Length: 356
Image (cartoon, rainbow, N blue to C red; front, side):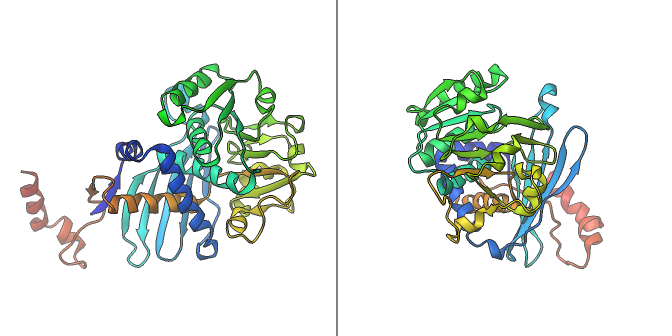
């Protein structure tokens, strides 16, 4: 039998622990795994693109545990009442190849994306940021707001979205969270207006196109940019001149993947970037100078899903979630008799007695 964690399980877990604490603890797990970067087998995700979206597989292993995530990205889904992104994942034992856990990852991906964003900002942003522009107020925005409030002390959000209903939704959801009582939200008239006075600028837009959300005049040296929305070929948020700025210091998760999917897909193949693991391990400083315009070109990497699945499984083992199991793998008395143990007369009779 294989452990199973569903959407309701994760929702109960987050309500029990609190979203801010969960994100911060998950960020700690992600940091610990990035610090042992060399132990992981790394590859860019396997993507199947269509005219309306993408379906991807994201695998990795440290030689002891193996994980993969199935995830889609279909920006037009909301028009049909469907989520833009859905995901599930598997954590498996390398020694036997047996799956240990099958889990939802739609909600958890939003949590781990926010955790990684805030972790990177801790390593890259100037000390004591207080104001963040949050451009794109859709499905990921609440998670980003919670993470940056909890982990960096953000106390003012400057909000902008072309869809005013999305901003109203974000304000309503944040107002209902008691832990965010000291967080103020200010509606901005434009992306440029949102950036005024901000220490950190987070972009989480969903359009699958080469959008221009941020331009050089909106930014100033010393800011930190958390570019989350551009995460597949042909989908970007930053004007190329932002990346060409002499102050730009660009950090990515895994360069071979980011050069195809991230903001830096707009740049030449030799465009200089720093991998997050080097900063996490202390081999490279996050910010070389006060005037650096640090940019976290985030596309999401399989290691972060590995961390999330491992963290969820540990919480299950500790009893934070009610244990549920599914018969994803046959249990056989004789491992050499698959037919007899599943389709044979004796196995059928046992199943009938169980269901009676």
